Length: 72
Image 1: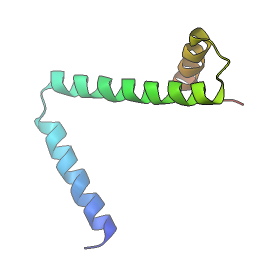
Image 2: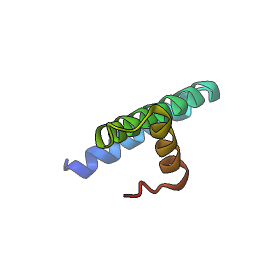
Image 3: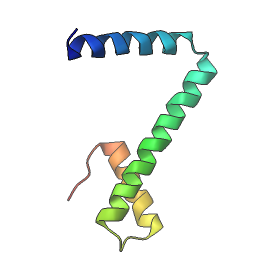
Image 4: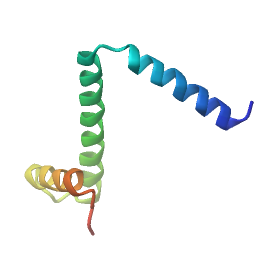
């Protein structure tokens, strides 16, 4: 079994687990993943721009999430 077979099998298992979740659980999971992505992006911006205020970090993160563009 090569790597792509493992990936395919993992995706099948993941899909099955998601289908078995209640709608509320799926929403909670999606929200957790969103918040994790937000926190990671905020952390990255904080590392790149230590001089930015929290408000600027929030605005920069929001811009990236809304537009998909990180800019300069």
